[in-house]
Image (cartoon, rainbow, N blue to C red; front, side, top):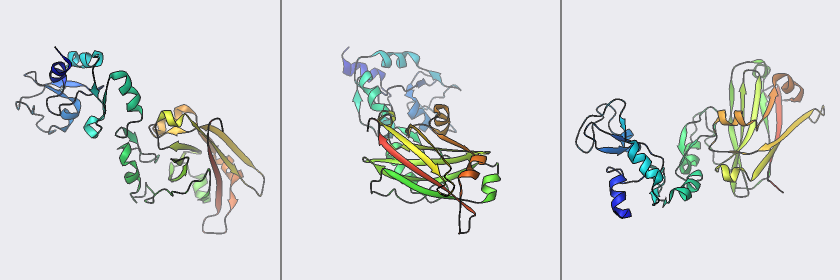
Length: 275
C-alpha cells in the first residue's frame, strides 16, 4: 500500500484532513470522523454525516486510527487545518510548526477575557470596545521604553475585590508587546506578553520599574517575557511577574491633582536577551 492509499484510509472522510494530534471517533456503524468535524455536527441530533447513524455517548474512540497516524512516516496536516492552515509535513517538522502556527488558538492577553482566539485574528479581537478591550489599535511607532500612570482612588487601593486594567501595547523590534496589570484581593500583578509563540518569547526579557520620584521609593524586577499562548494561570505558575501589595502601593503612589487622588507610575523596558 503506497502513501496515497494509506492516507485515503486514515484521513477524515468529511474534511479529508489527516490531522496531527486529532482524536477520531466512530458512529455505531463504524464510520470514522475527526474530532473537529464531530464538534461541527448538530449538537442536538449528533447524526453521522456519512449515514445519519447514531453515536454512542460518549462517542467511541478510534484509537487504532490515531496510533497509525502518530506512527506513520508520511506528510500529515497541521492540527489547525480546520481553522485554515494548509501546512503538511512529517510529524517531527509539524510539531515545530504548530508552536508558531498563525492558525493556532491562543488566549486573549486581557486578563479578564482569556477567550481562545485564532492567533491571526487576535488584532481584530482586541479592537472591540466592550470594556474588556481598549478598542484602539497598537501604535506602529517603535519604543523600547513604555511609561504610563494608573489613576487610583483610596477605594481602589483598600478594596479587596479583583480589578483588571485594559492592556496597553507597543512595538519593539517588529513585535507587539502588552503590559498586563491585574489585582487579586490585596495584591497587584504585572507582566509583559509578546504577541508571538514560546520560541520568540524566549529571546526577550523585560524590566518593570515603579518609582515615586518625590519620595525616592522604588521597586523593580526583570523577568522573561510571556508568550501570548500562556494563560494567566500559566503566567502565575511561571513567577515571571512583579507583585505589589496594597501596602507597597501606598508608598509608591504620587498625588494627583485630577479627579483621582493618586497616580501609580510604571516604566516597562523590553530588550532582546544578550543586548
